[in-house]
Image (cartoon, rainbow, N blue to C red):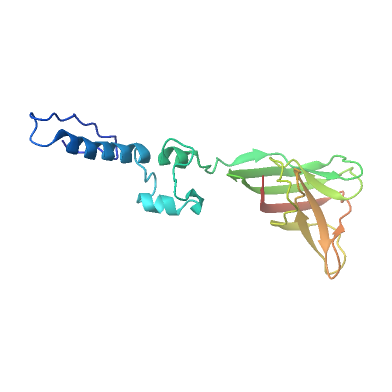
Length: 209
């Protein structure tokens, strides 16, 4: 019979000694091996890749000597790997650290995609008449960050934010939090930025969860 693998799994008839031309044990052993390979790989193991090798090369080397791991098949393990979810909206907000306050937003949007334990996000805030006091922070990130330190992989652009001459803004996502802390930095150390009643902030970055 013609093989239908990989679009489906092959099925075989058992051979019988004295009836079939070949020794049944030999043929059945070969068939068992083929079925075992098919069962391990599952159907269409290449998925959206050109080859199975390309798909395996695209995942972490930690698969090691037992590629199926605790899963029934390699395919099941590959299917369990996290993939990009659709871009999802969330609502960030600017708050003061002394009192949160509220602002009037002409733009207040956030978008994220999650890949495994990495969250990629974009935030755009344009506000007036904010009543918060103290230093500025951004709240409302879609997931809490890992509890292993600050992450500074955030790009920031701004307008109408008062900074010391020559300073720029950097943003830090603290450990075990869903906020962004905002600082100015120049030739010296980081300094929190006081609340602005009017301003524009845009962020693009990622963090681990």
